[in-house]
Each structure stands twice: as C-alpha cells, then as structure tokens.
Length: 172
Image (cartoon, rainbow, N blue to C red):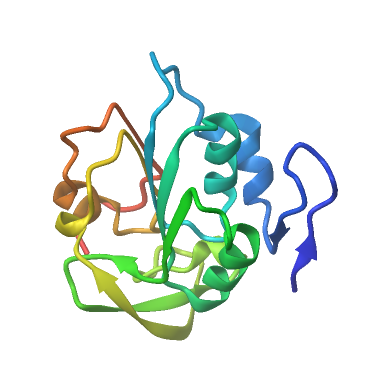
C-alpha cells in the first residue's frame, strides 16, 4: 500500500519502500566539479533518485525510465507536472519486450531475472534500446540485473559520473 511521505526534506512523496531514505541518505553522493545539466535515471522505481537529483541540482533536466506499472504510477504521482522530468514507462533493453517478475520484499526488487527476491508473478513490458537514449552528464542505473547491457549500450560521451547498483555479470 502507498503511504504519503511525511513533510521532511524529502517533501511529500508517495512511496511503498525505503528508497527515499536510502537515496537521501547519500547512496548516490559523489564529488563533481560542476552540477550536471542532464541526468539519466534507468530503473527509476518510485522516483527517489529523481527527487534527490532535482533537489541537489536545481538546473538539471532528468530523463527517467521505469517499466513496472505500479512503480510507474507512483513515479508519476511524485513527478508528473514537473517540466524538468521526462518520464518513460519502459524498460531499457536491446530486446523489444521483457518479462519483469515482481519483487517479493518491495517494489525495488522487480527484475527480468531471479536474483533472489522475485515472485512468479510477472508483467510483460515494452523496451527502448539504450543506444537510442541521448548521452547524459550523470547516469544512474539500477535495474535489478540488466545493468551491464544498459551501460554497454549507452552513449557515455558526455557522462562525467556513472552510478550503478550492480546485480549480475551477464547481459540481459
């Protein structure tokens, strides 16, 4: 179930997991010479990283991808209407479609692979090829197992920082 965020430095975001505490607690902090103007969020989940980036870098524009319908709905609740956020309800993959298995513990555990916390229930989602996504200065990838395929396919020519939550060695 969804709980509105208490009024804190995280504003009043809707969520079903602790990702806002993790992200605002510093898990994506890194020293940069200047603030990025373009940010890519692959595996946007409910929008915690996007919320953090919007607050940290007031001039940035974010392109975010989240394919799981329930997560995408919450992301939209948190960020719809923000002109700095371009949101796609798609997975990033070289495949045209992926089967995503629901997470057993929380919404952040959904994956195209059984990496330990997935249920048999799944959804089929549309994909966008990483090679078709514009290069961004700051790239975050947390896709519960498809990180390598995405990173290898992205145009990183303008990227100054890449942060990743790594789950498997193999490509999707």
